[in-house]
Length: 252
Image (tube, rainbow, N blue to C red):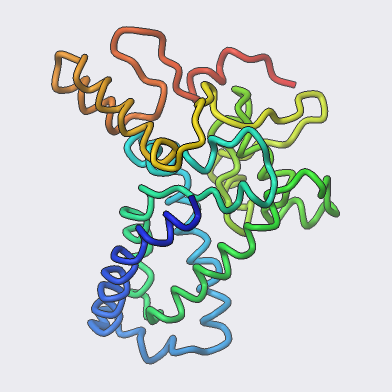
């Protein structure tokens, strides 16, 4: 899945680089020469990149079309460093749209792509059960293995939580944070797990499911909801979206 994602990403990344370059050179806000590659610019870019990643990742969970391109990263029933390489393939197509505002602020394409790589490398270590809890201040500010175990869990209380790349502060600010509970250890995988290890099926099964749902809906509005609403919405069955399901559990 990691190799497939790298191959699919080649063209979108090339197009994104050209778009970033054009936006940077346009210099609409006059910030290009001020930002340059100053040390403080890298520090600001660290936060800007992570903010973009948070919304990209969150929308991958809250828009079903985007979820179809991300779901393969969650379809493993285990959490380890191999899971980190089980990358979403379809998400490579829409990913870079979430970063288009950053070159407008004066950051050049090379800086942006370097920081995106730093963010991805940081996330690798969070895919483990070996690291339990880190000191309190680190757990409060940064994405950790504990926080990311929540993100990969399939229980209702954990669904669509902890979308952070590096800084967990975004989840705390925007109401998507959940603490890992010792009384409810994460169970990894999907709410309905798949029964295949075939890479093509793993990469495309949710797109097929969307198509089936779209075909069986009669109203155009329902067809569009199957594409753009969160996973779990149904026009003729119970609403199983995460935000709805979470209301059925008792707080702890």
